[in-house]
Length: 195
Image 1: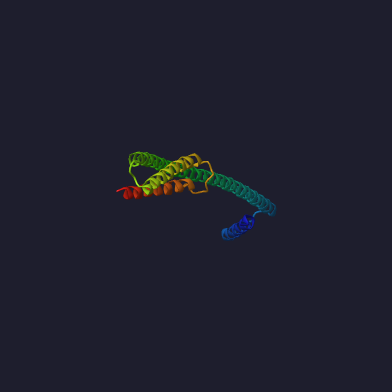
Image 2: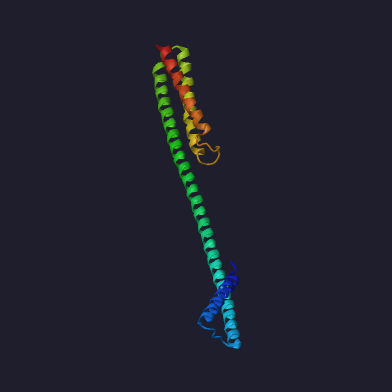
């Protein structure tokens, strides 16, 4: 906005209003020197008002710039806090997934160990008078169960060390599960052949 032009227009309206008022009063006129001094005072007042208006505009602009910079700083701070919270949430989810996988591996290792003990006890009981095929299946099931137990323990050792890819389920856990199932299947087949 051009405040100087606006003030000059307002000044012209006032001068015109004064002239009309003087004409109505009967023609009383001020001496020309007084009119010039009053006009010069009005112009300097207009210039002063224009300068003050410019100062106010500059101060407002500076205040808005400061507020904008502060808002940008707060926005960056909030974005950084959000990133930290997301990273903490991802870390917590990974930790929980690792805990679940560790529990699953311990269960697999315990089941394989118990099944191996059962197969050894059954082999000791079966040896006298058991067909050779049943004994071979019992030994094979014992070996698979020991392998499953070892794979579960090895997977526990590698869990969370970064050896595995992004997934939490390890290849050792999958191998331990299949070895356990294979050993139990061979043990069941051996029991059927013994009967």
